[in-house]
Image (cartoon, rainbow, N blue to C red; front, side):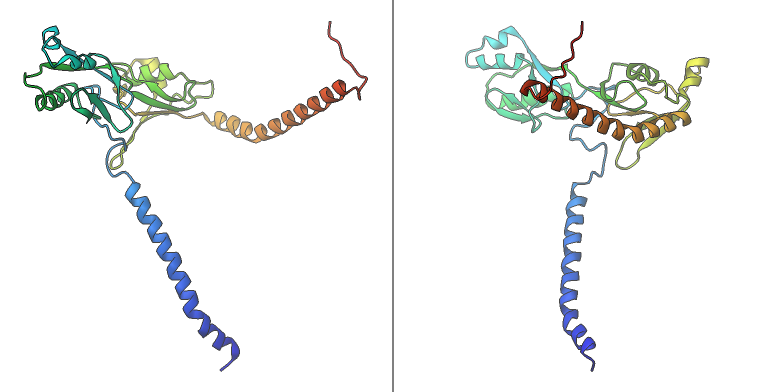
Length: 269
């Protein structure tokens, strides 16, 4: 038996053990990633259709309406705290006096009223009649691409695609003939290719769909716009390097002038 074959046989168990360790580590990381992946909807805890029935989201504030006679009942004075608007806590709860934190994220106004009423019924004798109102509602859509405003933009009531496009605006490089409305979902995402230019010039609004919260409005660039953005990407690092060099030169000149090592003074009149 040659020494090379003998050495290989001695090293093979060690290599197999290391390979098994790497595979186990990879499968463990993949399992952790699969546990974090979303399998339904957008991925947020609060879900619903706000344009049909508003629900309490993470950016919203809620306030409760109570009758003055109820606030005058002995032992129920702290119910006045419910009349003050309060934001949703990071864990999705709101504070209810006499009860404590109550999970309310994703509930509609009717569901939230029923929940708080049932919670207060367990600690207070009289039946509490109250109504929940979402007084601050921050529902938004996203604008990307050749838009003047980028990122989340507040969703207005009854906002359509044309309204959203004018709200976000567009640059001179925008291709209005291929505007994409993307409705994200973990199972069945929807992408609608809309000719916004045709809608604006002919008035044919069949594709002027109603916007929903967390929709993505993507306005791509034209062919010349793609070339312009590519050239911008290529030139931007050079411009940054030149700007850095000029900045360093100005710092050196200022130091020389202050230290008296340079006699070149420039005055502007």
